[in-house]
Image (cartoon, rainbow over all chains, first blue to last red; front, side, top):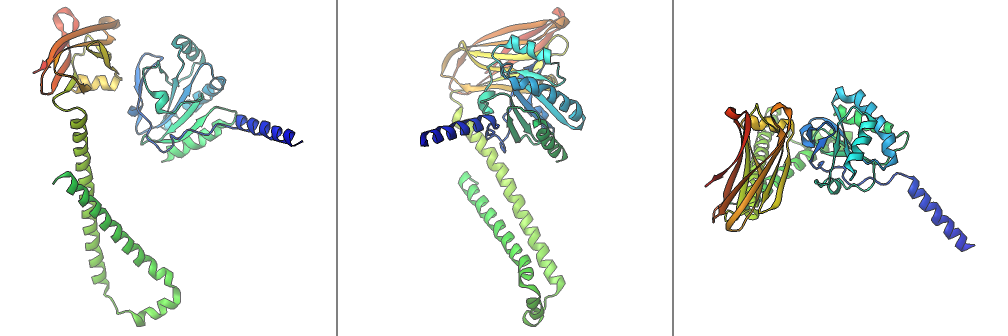
Amino acid sequence: MRKALLLGSLILSTAWTASSPAAAPTMVGKDAPDFVLRTLAGTNLRLSEFRGQVVLLNFWARWAGDSRQEMPVLDKINTTYERAGLVVLGVSVDEDLRRAREFADAMKVSYPIMFDTGGSNIGRDYLLEKMPMTILVDRSGVVRYSHVGFRAGDDRIYLEKIRELLRE
Amino acid sequence: MNLKSRVVSIIVGAMLFAGASAADAAAASAPAAAGPPASAAAPAAAPPETPAATSGATTSDFKTLDQEVQGVKKDIIELNKDLFVLEEELLFPANTQVAVYVSMDVGTFFALDSVTVKIDNKEVKNYLYTAREADALLKGGVQQIYLGNLKVGKHELVAFFTGKGPMDRDYRRGATINFRKGVGAKYLELKITDKVLKHQPEFTIKDWE
């Protein structure tokens, strides 16, 4: 009986941990590490050149199912808040560049998509462990919010934080 | 003023400022904390103060504090500058320092995308240029693309320039220089210029001996 209870509680706690969003990495409050990457359009973009604007950084991978749900949502946010000073940047961490490009082409988002081809330290700098990961950077270049994964309704949290930062 | 005495003066300034702020806060909160009975007794207990004398002393206190704060800020900026120079001297001492710069004097024949620098066959830098950075170079800016250490002796530097050439075609060119590293710091400049006669960009490396 005792063993069954122990096993049951172990299963329940594992299920609860798996279902709840992973704890955000501790980038919040720190300066967003600068990086420069090539975009799908062929230009190069540097994060620090957006200082003065609120930046939403979305790290994604083709193999992360949540990315497929999240990107159209971010596209809508970009369209709505671009004129208010929000910059949305997508960063692919896929190792297979060709497939990542095909995926990005297919998603047809309006914001720039950049590709980390392995030459940068972006994964280590941003403590990337799970995909997708979304980070909000304020006008001073400080990380103010970090979110791992994506579920329906998470966009409401993004919008709340975005509005807060745009008002600053 | 040396580094140590500057640090000490900053700490003393900060303590003075903190002390003055605490004294002001205590003076401001004391009447509120005392309440009505104390305020009724206050006129009898405390000697009367003239408003002009009080405000004059406060204003001059604020001026002094403000000046001290400005002084501390200035010292911090100076200290930061000194620390940066010290760090560079420590990490890249003149006897082993090598610095590589990029300059551009071109507008027609080449749009810079990236530069890769290899020293003695080892890649030391790969830099991607944004439109803004390329524009800054075109306007006369000079970029320190690499700062490192090299032993005294013969070395080889190879630089690869990638971008868009004439007719918007992808363009990739290299330039090489063999140089001798002496006892002092070595400065090399990667120059991108227009060769008008050939309608092509030209890539050269200059050794600032």
